[in-house]
Image (cartoon, rainbow, N blue to C red; front, side, top):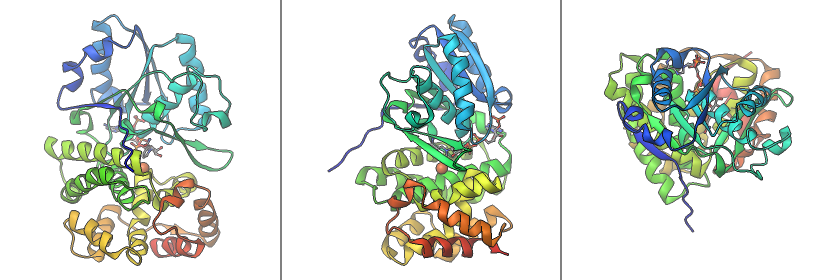
Length: 366
Ligand code: NAP
Ligand code: FE
């Protein structure tokens, strides 16, 4: 049985915001804008939004305090401020962090929820409509029903999953990503790669999600090696487009063990989300290859690579030096991996020994 749901309208291209400003004017008279600390005021995205809002007499409040890997507390605090301004819609601008924060704020602006209730995905009042303007090319959050938040009590990242937080409209203008530093470009592209790859290999993959995954892998196979060099606007468009396609993949098929392993690397070792996935991806794919050789071969051919080792070399070139893990970290991270529900999307589901092996072979253990 097929079940494909992707309610986000995607508008892409240079100046897509300006050319479709009527969409914002139809959403009400008060906007709450959610951004990170700096980048959106430097890459033109915030200015484009504000110009449209001002031209159309839409009042707005700017909340520009969102940190990377936003915490539950952070979105609760932001939602208190949002509620006071009584917005009719939320605009998230930035990388996955502000976009995910915008989604959680959209829920909390219309519902009084404690932390546990926030993660149930079931809300008595519809969250506010969300407009998403991605300025990194990686998370695909602009087309997913997920908001990933850092949980400092349980020392991990947790995912809100609800069809009610698919953004209403996503505006993809690659100009905003032009000045992304090389390291963030690479790490976010690796996140897109892991979405396409994990979604393709997930037990929840469908014939429709696979169409998106195959296209994303094909584009990323060409675009990833370029991320080490100067990128043209066309390259940036390819990255943003494939990241969106890969977002559609995980919206249907979910992520798997590689993401589950990455959460501890981000929480305890402050490794960027995409890099965390990238660091375990070669060994993860080797593990899958032992059980699904044909499918892994298909992934490699889509990426225009001949062998699994070529995949390892590509990742190594993008990731640089291999970080170290202590034995205590290794044991903790293995245990934490199994607390994340997406492990069960992996085909086959790895056991403790499998996860330990992937960590051991991906890091220098000391
Ligand atoms: P991010 O944490 O949103 O941003 C990383 C850094 O990039 C920030 O310092 C940000 O600066 C900067 N930045 C953003 N756009 C920029 C631009 N155009 N030019 C220069 N700098 C820019 O990173 P991300 O990798 O995009 O998002 C990671 C988060 O998304 C994680 O929490 C992850 O778990 C989540 N995620 C969500 C989904 C989903 O489906 N919802 C999927 C995968 C990952 P400022 O702070 O100044 O803006
Ligand atoms: Fe991700």
